[in-house]
Length: 107
Image (tube, rainbow, N blue to C red; front, side, top):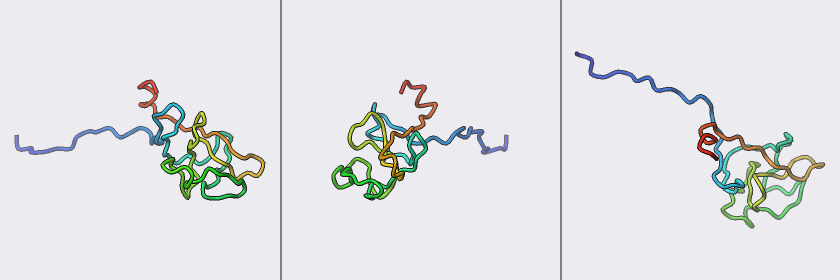
């Protein structure tokens, strides 16, 4: 045959998957979910408004905090969380979606 090469049928990923976490409480989560389970927007970790707090990037180095509003678990809560931009709700837990492949491995 004179055919020297050809394209392969490689299936594409079915779903985009949010980076997940491997620890039981999400201490290592570094994804981009920025709303609480109740749908409230997260407050940046570097901001002190509307909620003053002492969980800052300086006090928790290596915890994934920074000038962003992504859910994190710097203090060992049961799962990732954030302060909210709602003056009525100080903070809330976040729902971090898990990949089906990751769930299938028993995570």
